Image (cartoon, rainbow, N blue to C red; front, side, top):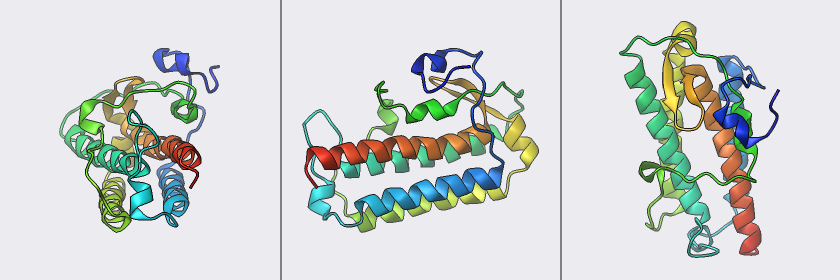
Length: 186
């Protein structure tokens, strides 16, 4: 079994380490979102938009990336419901929590250099989360389990795992945000 080891990303023989039902997945996602917003709530908009180095993302850019990711995943899952797909084997998406290996975001998920207030970004994050909640609430367990989308690192994943992936992805970026705060001494 592969545990917290990025080479697992490329191996289809790995098994999933966490198997949540849809309610547990959404509870996990909500808990992580609350932790994320709490971790930045005391920072000014200027601090949130400050980069520790030119080549790294600001805290706000991390938040924007999370918004773009969640919005895109929900849009793609809605599209996937229009097509028939086959179930896939599950993979250990929890390896996303391992920050020792950097993974570059595809261009369409990279944040802009636009200045955002926390209030503006919270609205965006709330809208993407509302879309996710509505999608999960209105999609059958059968469709969540049997419909598949391809992830660029994990390969084919059922929609249920995509829902779980959102929370683990946010946890990964929460760690990145904490690193930015430490680098900037916030």
